Image 1 (spheres, helix red, strand yellow):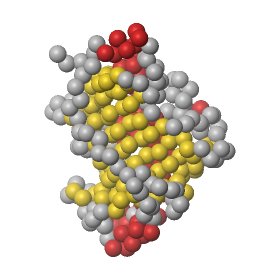
Image 2 (tube, rainbow, N blue to C red):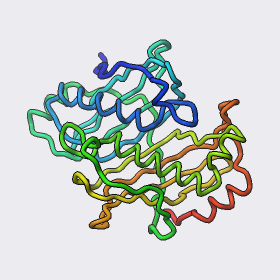
Image 3 (cartoon, rainbow, N blue to C red):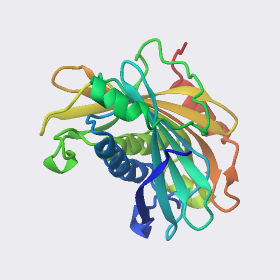
Amino acid sequence: MTHWTETYRGGVPPWQCDVTEHFTVAYYFDRLEEAAANLAETLGVLGMPGRIEARYSKELHAGATFHIESAPLAIGDGWRAGHRVVESTSGEVVTWFDTHYDLPLSPDQSRAIGGRLATWNGPAAEPRPEPTATDGFIATARGRSKPGDLDAAGNFSLSAMVHRFSNASGQTAAALGMDTAFLQRNRRGFSTFEMTLRISGALRVDEPWLIETGIGHLGNSSLRMIHRMVSVRTGSEIARVGQYGVNLDLDARRPARWPDDIRDRAAQLLVSVR
């Protein structure tokens, strides 16, 4: 018996695609919020996950239709849920979200969730080293939280947060030489295949925030950016994202080697990790 249930169904409007010509990662999180809320309501639980591990295995382009299937996976000190994005026409899973909630459960909630546990058949999260310090990080995004950024519970929403991290990714790429002229001239884009989001704090409305970024890994065609969002007022970390992606050839839709000048700039932003 399967306990995976449909929690969202929709499509990809063209205005939610990015310069890489596919569905923007922040809008995956926008749909995830709806799917997660629908699952949580059926289970009688509330709260935002403390960690989300996302793996993108296939692109979705403008006009694509998809749905999300969700299920609780485990209970302990908190609980764990899985969400899989399914291309509706082919039935292929194109994206996986493994979400972890740190909130304690009541006995009734534990029984409700425990009776519906499903088996996770998605990719296992690969451990990634974290920076030993933030020295060498550069400022890549800055702003203030707005009323429109809040979710139904009054929290800075997942999609709003990931939109800001996407902006930081674009600023980082430009700092490496992947500016608009480079992307258009060479038909290139940065394509994310893995994201890990850790939420450790909260922002109030109209609170200023800053994102700083360092490079945790540099390969022949791959790059791992590490972004951290902090409150400007307190200096405390609100969230952190590890974003793994590749230099994508937009015509071949395959990874392409980094040019030497971009590699040299990226190497200057490499931070110590362990």
